[in-house]
Length: 136
Image (tube, rainbow, N blue to C red):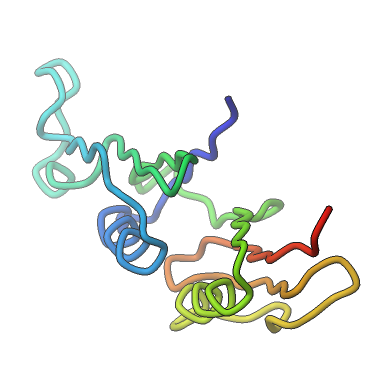
């Protein structure tokens, strides 16, 4: 099994609640820093930040946490790929993900798909949404 693990700039909880709503995901775990063992104490301003989160989207799993401020780096060099069977639903999810973010490639038909688009969501995470052609 291979699962993406994303690091957020202190907005993991908001991102996961957004994905739960727009992608039909289900948050299975949201462990806060304050819930860790005493030897993993965090500063007061970080106690409510997310140490580990897990979400299922269909039969896939997405995991994440809030990166410590001195360890956060802007995501680059990858995209989270979301495959959706229905073109209208794929376009709806693409539009929801790109709202408040940016579009790198507008959603539309391609030689390999009924619809494909690339965007960066409002939380800085790059996405590719694909509705593949039959047999692809």
